[in-house]
Each structure stands twice: as C-alpha cells, then as structure tokens.
Amino acid sequence: MSENAPFVPTYFRTPTYPLFLACVYFLFGHSFPLVTIIQAFLDTASCYLVYLISIKSGLLQRRNITSLALAALCPFTSIYACYILTETLSIFLFTLSLWLLIEGRTRSSTGCYWLCGMAMATLTLCRPAFVLLPAVLAVALFVRDGKKKALRYLLYSLFGFFLVL
Image 1 (tube, rainbow, N blue to C red):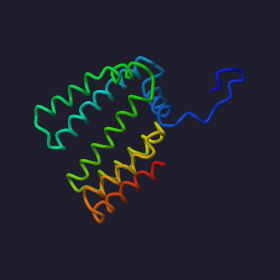
Image 2 (image 1 turned 180 degrees about the vertical axis):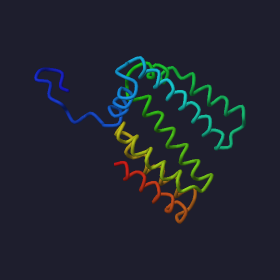
Image 3 (image 1 turned 135 degrees about the vertical axis):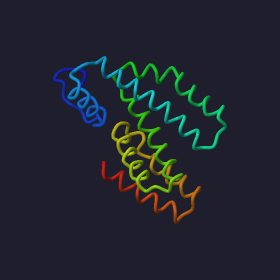
C-alpha cells in the first residue's frame, strides 16, 4: 500500500508470507502473538537444520555443537522471530533448501531434489533476492559431482521449482 491517500496497492508484496499468515489466521484465529510463537518454532527448526547440515558436511562433533550454538544465539534471528516479518520464514526456507540439497546428494534421492526445488521456489516467492540461488547451487553441483550426475539432479530440482512457480 502507498503511504499517502488514496492508499493504492503496489506490486512489491510477494505471496509467500501473506499466505503463511493467512494459513495461521485460518487455522488458529487472528492472533499476532501466535504468529510470533510459530515463527519461534521456525527459528528453532532453522537452528536444527543448521546442525544437521554441519553433521552431513563431516565436521567434528564439537564443531557441530558450535554451529548449532551460533545459529541459536544469533541475536538477529531471535529478534526477527518476535516481529511479523518475512525474515524468519525465509531463513527457514533457505536452510531447508540447503539441507534437502545435501540430503539428496547423500541419499541419491530424487525426492529430496524435487522438494529442494519446491523449497527454493517458495523461498524466491518469499524473498525475491534469492532468485539466483538455484543457479549458484547448480554451478556448485556441476563442480562437485560432474556433469552427468548434476544434470540429472538439476532436472528434478527444476521440476519442483517450476511446479511451485
């Protein structure tokens, strides 16, 4: 909405966060404190996903705990969870995308790549700045896994990505 009358709607609102709020309000009623509680759970889940990512990356147990502590004690994410902002949801979707990508590589699971593509598309619809994330991750897959294997995983991810978009 514009700041001055006649308050004309703008095109700068992305659909993911309003849909998230609509689902919360539909299921539990119109409650701002409940939204912040759900965002606190999303922030906690993001911390756990950071921990799982560090485990899959082969770090020592001490470093896994350190990565969990750094994610949990970051003051910015804790503050964002207390306000009705897109940051908490976008951080969760970002860490979920990375975890699904790593899980897909570990298990050679096409389902994980499909879900990773869906999570990246939802993230892009939440924060448009992440629109280049699939391209960056595709380059990383090509460098790490080789052309043939990366292309197969990329096709599954793109299917999930475009299914959401």
